[in-house]
Image 1 (tube, helix red, strand yellow):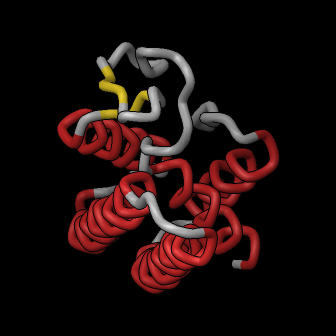
Image 2 (cartoon, rainbow, N blue to C red):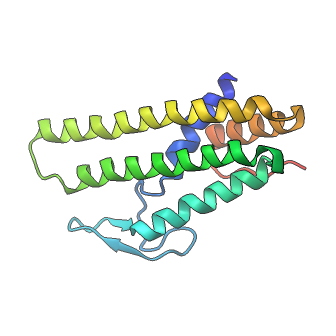
Length: 158
């Protein structure tokens, strides 16, 4: 379970799609706009689509069954809500032009939003995880552990 929770942290962080990307297009080809400081950022629609793709990818990898769909829906909604909350905190930080103290405070808001999101995701995912078959749990453990260790998208187990 520790591995799963730790991996959820990495997954939640990866999910937002709003973290620093230097090219003008994201890896999936989504167009990006630039902030006044010339750093590209995905549009809200692109961020939402990225979260939805991540959710669909996890759904397939975890082999969610029809009986688990209700529990999965809660996980997926929590992932969307967390991404929106984190994006809001990050946008506020990016738009701030204040003092060093303001910068530290807005960074604290981002970190707190991330931590709160992880706790929410862990709570709803633990219910789904408890309902999974042993094979699904093994896959979940592998998927989340691989994301954490390698920082990349894992290949689904068959």
